[in-house]
Image (tube, rainbow, N blue to C red):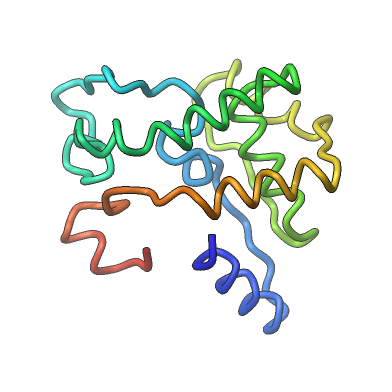
Length: 149
């Protein structure tokens, strides 16, 4: 989270807004709750080339997925809504936008505007996120060289 906080601080300092297609904030599927330690991707799924999606890294990163799923159950919302709503609470100039080919996912994303967090919940989320170390690069070596971690 320190890496994200630093980037948000720089954007804030420079007066730059941030627009994110929800595919990225949803961790390429991690934060939807749809990926499990037994997930196998189809032959042509790009995640087969992403280090974060090796069997070992998926298992190592389940602490984050389990936390998001648990919070979603507590709040009676979807894991995707937890992730997007958390982003909305970070700064008023951070705008996640739905990037979906599915009407069901679009409706789920839009319903996030009805989600609220208390200050205590946000503090708890940040504490848990700070304690979780995500394993595996976001992209394969070729693509990772072009982005920050």
